[in-house]
Amino acid sequence: MDKIDLKILTELQDDARLSNSELASRVGLSPSPCWTRVRNLENDGVIERYVTICNQAALGLPDTVLIYVSLDKHDDEMLKRFESALAALPEVIEAYLVTGEEDYYIKVAVSGTEGYEKFLREKLYRIPGIRHSRTSFTLRCLKKRFSVATDADMNNAQGQKPRRSVGESPRPRAPGTFASKRST
Image 1: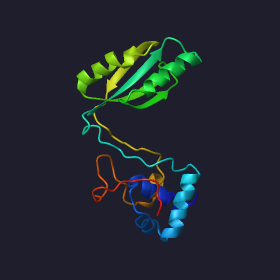
Image 2: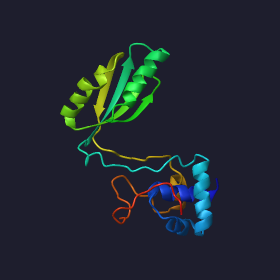
Image 3: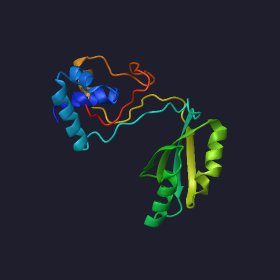
């Protein structure tokens, strides 16, 4: 990957709905080589997929809780069962097997303390093998990215304007347009 590939990734991380022509203009290429580079980044697995990021508050789940879970056992079968059950819970945004005192770190979207209690009682605590859990409610999000940075160090070092911050929206799009695998 060269600097142009990194510029392409930076632009797509900021707004994956850019047309190929707009993307090419922003990175200083003509449309055809830009399209080829995007395809290569996709084929090489650098770009895994394009997604829509929903506002969890608008979906009625304004609160985020961070739950640490310890299991009774740590054999492969127990881990697989727990992970499969956890993956099936739609409120779980992220889940990690971690080192340290707890076994899992789970990020969950809930609707207040009542929603959290309901999630615990009706879903999480029904998964066999949980020994202990510890939870924190988040107060506010300080930084939110959905992929690793490709340009932050370069922009800061060169004194360029920082990229859009949490809560700041991309430029408006026409109704009915959305991202998909790029074909133009």
